[in-house]
Image (cartoon, rainbow, N blue to C red):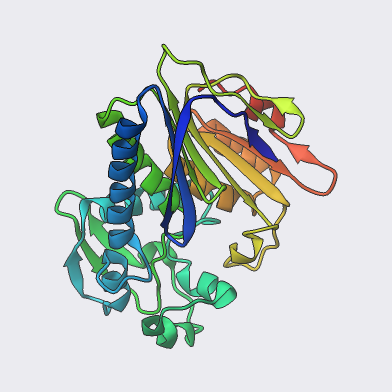
Length: 294
């Protein structure tokens, strides 16, 4: 289990977003200024949710899911950026993580928006990378296949944290931690402030000033992790460290379905990434994870 050591003189604020508890803790400023910053942070996260949520009728994601093959639409900068990040994470994980696994994932976890019920009755196989065609410069997206559902559930919280932390930086807050549901966290501490410290199990991490942590596990999220090939989960829990909360968020999902050799290759392919995984009496990558410089 990952445990973050407490810091003194932090002001913490709580908010509900993306069906999870979001806490931001700020230090180095007075309480009134911290509260204003937190409000700006939460407003930015809510803005991201309004554009990326599977469950809001006016979101880019809902509009994409309702499109027919051949339809085109222009999406927000946030949606296009998150989609590009999600597709990159999919490539890194050999499609173990994929933003268009929505049909399979929703069949498992339920809580399906009514507008998607007709798609869930379809068992037609779809080539995921042929689901859409995008033009990042113009932000136009064309749907190429029927029966696919876009769901940012495995990356959206991390992406929202990255965007919200940019808001915090604009407010010049020296120390900040944002914790989304206990599974994805993002940190910053200026050089003038004490660094953050933490432990993974009984092992201490090197002190760090920035970076994101994310974890996935069978205890609270395993039932949501699906594989197109039916491949079983290989680990009980996975952990990722990166400068990007979105990337860390997505890669822990994919890591649950990847063997040690695949995880080694993933860490080698992505600079500034550390992964760890634990199973029945075994662990992988913990030393590298704890020695990561951030």
